[in-house]
Every structure is written in structure tokens, then in C-alpha cells.
Length: 129
Length: 211
Image 1: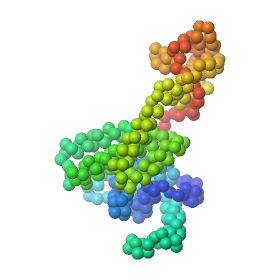
Image 2 (image 1 turned 180 degrees about the horizontal axis):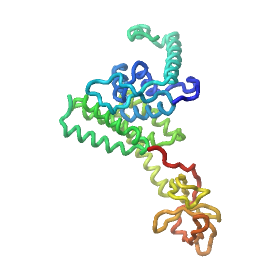
Image 3 (image 1 turned 90 degrees about the vertical axis):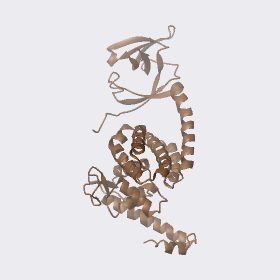
Image 4 (image 1 turned 45 degrees about the vertical axis):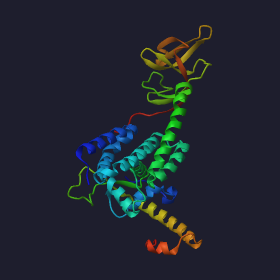
């Protein structure tokens, strides 16, 4: 589905759970539970999306053209159910996610400059790029 | 790791039933996937943590079902639930659940009397008031209306159910209204007891779409 060229900046800032889902889809296409697991793993279980929040966000992201259903089954395991629906970032979604990441990185720099962020913790978490 | 089959089956059945809280359109698209996700969650939850899983899932469902029902225009609800949403995804389920219950009670205690006594939404099921109000139009019926003019649209109780019609004449002495439908080809005299209210607002017709 080709959407007309839109400026990804027009939809920023991204909602907390939407951005988490887009991050989970940035490196692989995933199904619903895969997205949940990836988010929980990356956040040390501090961010847990329930099924309703997850699919509410998926509906919103599909409608705004940030993600789409994927035909591929990249993470398919042996016992994986073929009926599962996989999702992936669209081109527009990918650029929106990176613009959002840049926006957040700028905020982090400000926070660092104002000594709101301890460098020690920052380094331990691996920093941001 | 996994639960004995009966507990599992009951949990899935309860979850399936709870999905009825979502709008039909949302269910058609996502219910199967949500059940799959719930089964996966269940599979990886030890029995003694089952209640925590349910606490989390229950507050999630109640909150998001409400969100799916509220139109995007209801900014107030969005803002109220947005705050709760942050708490749900940050794992504070017990507090969310309590707050959600309180919200639901306040909401119900406002909504039910309002709907019963002041105004209620209806959806036209036929074209008897076309072209002004075609089939599938949502209308808001104001139940406290007392002053009626010819040309007003009203909803009244008929033996076959609630009916929408256009006022052709008002007989104040007899407290009755002469109403017409189907472009004047059906008409009737109704008493003020039968009257539910005047159509105050009308939306755009929403034909059923999708599979």
C-alpha cells in the first residue's frame, strides 16, 4: 500500500507503547507475542504490554501506515503456528522511528548537559547512538 | 511451567468471553491473535503467578476496551486513560485496577441516568426518514424536549419498537402529534406518552463495511 509522501516529523512525538513496538520491529518482523517478549526483554520486564494495549497500538500503527502485515516468517520456529500474523515496519515507519530516536537523543543530550543524567549509569547501559 | 489443562482451558474461555467487551470491528480483526497471545502468556506463566497474569490482563482489557469504544474526539477520556495506560505498561497493576474500577463506577453512575433521562444515541435501521436521515445514521435523542414544531424529527414508542418520524402537525389541546414517515406515505397520530424525544444531533450514515 503506497501512501503519499508524508513528513515523519508530522506524527511526532510517538506514543510510549507505539515507539516500543516500532523498536521491537526495527531488526526483525515479529508476531504479537514476539513483540511483547522483545519489549519485555529489552526493558528488563519494566515495560509489559498487555494484549489489549498491544493490539490497540498495532491497530493505530497499521492505520497510520507505520507498520504493515508481513508475508515472511523470519523467526518461525518448528512449532510455530502458520496462522500467526507477522508485522513489519514500513519505510515511513522506519524513518519516523529514526526521527523520533534523534529527537529523544537530543533531549538526552540536554539532560546530560544539565547534569540530570549520571554518566556512570549511562555508560553501564551501553550509552545511546 | 504450563498449567494443568482444565485451568488453562478455563482461563482461555474467560479471556475469550472478555473480548466481547471490544467493538465488533476490533474483535473481527484482532480477537484470534489476542487469544493466541494470551495462550502464549499462559504457557509461560507458572501456576502460582496466574493471579498476577490475570490482574494484568484484566486491567489491560477493561482499559483498552473502553478506549476502543470512545471516539477519537473524546479527548477527556483519552487523557484520563492515557495516564492509566502509562501505569499499566509500567507494571503497577494493582493500583491501576483499583483506579479503573473507580473510574468505571463514576462513569456508569453518570452515563446510566443521563441515557435514561436526558439523551440517548440511536441508530436508524431503515430509510423511512430518507433523504434527511438515511439508514445507518447515528442520532442523539433529547428526552427532555417539550416544545415541538412541525418539521422536527422525533423518536416514539410503537408496538413494533422505537420508531423515528417527522412531525407534520401538533395538537396542543389533545397533547398529540401527527407524524409521518416514508416521505409522507405513512402517517400516524401519537400521544405525548409514546414520545421518547426529539432528534437533536445527527451523524453521518455509517454503512457496514469490511468482511
